[in-house]
Picture 1: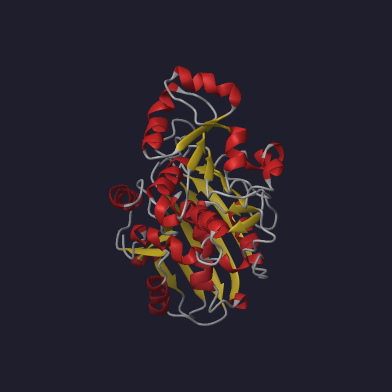
Picture 2: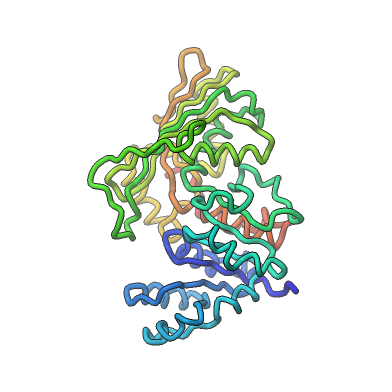
Amino acid sequence: MRGTKNVLVVGTGTIGEPLIGLLCHFKDQLGLDDVLFHKNTPLLTDRSKVEALIKRGARIVANKDRIAGFKELGINVDLTSEEALEASRVVIDCTPMGNEMKERWYKSYEENTDVFIAQGSEFGFGKQYARGINDEILDHKVDKYIQVVSCNTHNLSLIIKTLGIEEDDPDNLVEGRFVCIRRSNDISQDAKFVPSPEVGPHKDARFGTHHARDAWHLFNTLGYDLKLFSSAIKLNTNFMHALQFHLKVRKKVTLEELIKRCERNDRIAMTHKKTANSIFSFGRDHGFYGRILNQTVIPYNGIHVSEDGHEITGFCFTPQDGNSLLSSVAAAVWALYPDTYDKIIQCLKRYFFAEV
């Protein structure tokens, strides 16, 4: 039987930690009861993070065999994993093991849970979703599992919808090609930093990398069949991802028209800045947990339109984690308040910026 509006966040990494903090901070405005978070391993280096989340009002969850380890660190676990899954209406998995967790745990708790949400790496977990792209296809009767697409796929998809698909006409986009210029790792991570640019493989014969593949599936939920291709390269920086895009469109456009479209979209932040570090610094100073919740940041001088008006080329920056946070919260609140979620999540609006 479904009762209290508890949300369980699994994982405390680059998405999980700020998501827990955001849910705690806006708990009353979002109409939530308890915010629970699952921590898998009791690590001394993570004790300060766990204690900070508990001070924010979150309740810690752990597997039975790990409770003693947390107690040795001075942390008292509130619920076991089984108890938390039984008590939660929404589960948001922020780990790279969402598909495995679905088979091992989540399928046993479908009766008492409205929705299970996983992140961008977990292709096949459920229906692809990005806030503002395909909200209208969410269906309470069908969608028990939702995959929030990756941060770069959010960016890529918003560029497609805003610049390429004129008035929701998918036939206007002839082709979209993208290069994801990825940061090496997050500043919170010690591993996986690359010392020099590293080219990513094109594993998908049709789409190149998973970014275009996931965007195709995202738009396919709307019945669109778009011609998309993406590549990826990783740079030796911790700051932000960037995206290079090239769209071919049927209807002639002007640069002025495209700029106006971007300025009208509250999920797009425009900027006169040119560097990832300066945009990152703005997010650190003014965002929530240092995150900009806009789905893309576009430099005013970053868009070019060909002489014939049918090709759009440009650069933009990806506010990594921020766009995934927005979609995760939107999907969670949709599950609890399907008729009013759009109005409820407007409490996050202060962390959307027209200009960065």
